[in-house]
Amino acid sequence: MNEEVKTNRAPKALGPYAQAVKSGKTLYCSGQIGINPMKGKLVSDSSVEEQAVQALNNLKEVLEAAQMTPKDVVKVTVFMTNIADFKAVNEIYANFFADNECLPARSAVGVQALPAGALVEVEAVARKNN
Image (cartoon, rainbow, N blue to C red; front, side):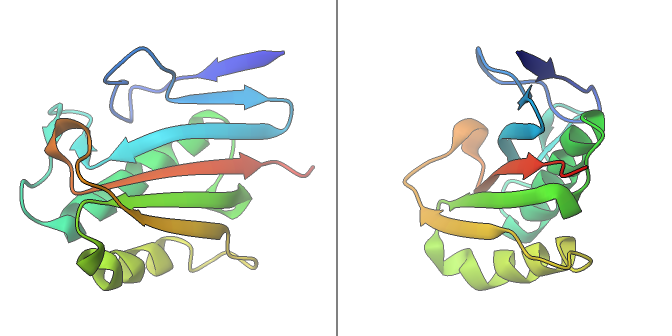
């Protein structure tokens, strides 16, 4: 049985989808962008670094709503509107997962555009092993 995971500590979905869906021990997180959930808008229009930090913080809030942490993440996909931002986003990503004994598998993809004019979006799959 699938269970929708919701939290007001991360931005509401911008369309007809869940922030995350838990299926058994696995959590499928929809993409998070750098929207400040309290203000409902991007933390910055031009700073990929600020947006990446906020997107990952939003992801963490969704994980916590499912009683998970970044240590439970097994796969991440990072979308960027400018693949030249890879190095900057990668440094922020590395800090976010610094405490993981096993880093998640990851893909980084350059895309033409993202919702709400975002520069970066992060989606993840997590699994609770206990």
